[in-house]
Length: 187
Image 1 (tube, one colour):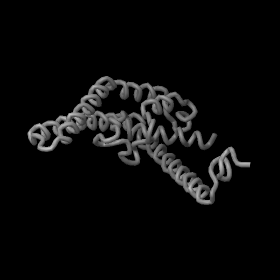
Image 2: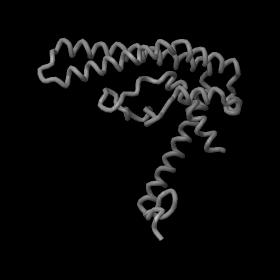
Image 3: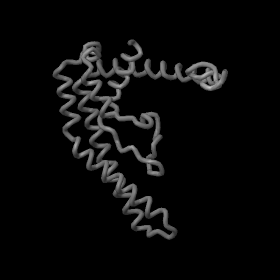
Image 4: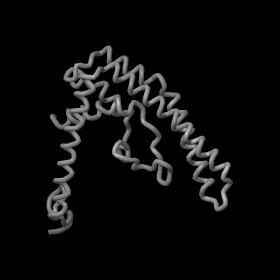
């Protein structure tokens, strides 16, 4: 239960950090699948995670988040949702156009620059919306709650780091999650 609560707390800490997810590029796209520590890995859906967190009254009480604050945060997240979808689609299309252009030998430099600028413009608009949303959510929650969330996030990260370290050590000893290696069919 405590680990689950920490995971939820860690996810809640991501609300100000990732108010709306930026585009998650596919293989070979600019940005790619593993863009860094905040990419969340395959299947990561920060929008769904935020919904779960905004519906977790136990955690809201623990952090001192009121129902009014939850409503305000929802309004902030929903305000630009359709625009974000359009911008993410525009960025993906611009990235696709850029990839197609740069795969050809002797590509027209002016067309490449134009494609780079189109992808950059969409990315810039996405970043503007995300940054303003983070600022608004921080203002709604206040420094004290945001600091609690960051502290919980650090604890959760350290726990995950330790869990991964233990898993790797188990793998080195010839064990996996189900016990000694060898598979189900050995006698």
